[in-house]
Image (cartoon, rainbow, N blue to C red):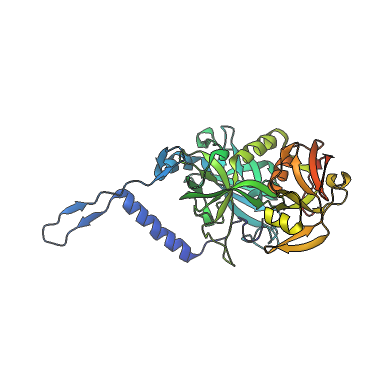
Length: 402
């Protein structure tokens, strides 16, 4: 992952642990209700009623308390400890151990069926020689193995060898229905502090984040629910306790490694599709076009004197890629428009399979909907003229760098 966003796990400091212990004691006191003894000679006991339980509401008005969601779903959230064959790249895992030899990483995951399959992030288990899983407050560890992982979406499925009574599958929701302002709960193991629940709202939808291999993950969910290193792979839950995303990345800001209120989750609709392929085939094959692009806005169109005001401007074309073979052309003159550096003079993609393209995201979505070997028809604007090209998509390379 990008250095400011990747979730790997690091030891937590004693100051953090002390602060969390105090916080937990405070929460326990609130949950139980305060009991106060007067200092006079005839002791009396005054019981203060606890405050109303905090609830999480969805866009349809349904609500459960955070405690209800936690009690319902926490048994299905697992603590993952993986021994890496080789330390992950510091660029992708700024919280990992940079030293030589083997390294141990911790993260989260959640059970999806009675067979012991668990969804987590690919970066939690990538390169692992040994994976151990713990459930709830049990100290017992169970062996697990990787069924498959997809670096392009940062999704992995692992299989745990655990008794049936330990398996509590979570219900998967619909990430396309989430709205900004919906309240959410995250459960995971930040800094190794197992079974931690945090709450917040959906801050934004349809974000783009980078995958471990440099490709774009579409429709990511942004949340201000506090998530930190170790939450990776854990569920982001809606008001009904359904999983709507996999907590995957944070924007830490500066040189810090902690939460600043900006976290990102891979949408569960993406994870559903990818996990099904991983379970069936052990791998996922993604279609590949072979371009990079920028959004065409009306301001950019005016500066570049274009006769279209929306689309995707082709910025570069990978040599010998499907786009290159189809004759798609990139820009060759660099300009700065509203602080954005753009290569002008290239093709503008204005439609894909007959559907209008308003941004580069539309192109990515069109390619993602295909399989390697499928045809994709693109409508290009070049020198004021429109032309259609048919591109036979290839299989995506191992990384965006080739």
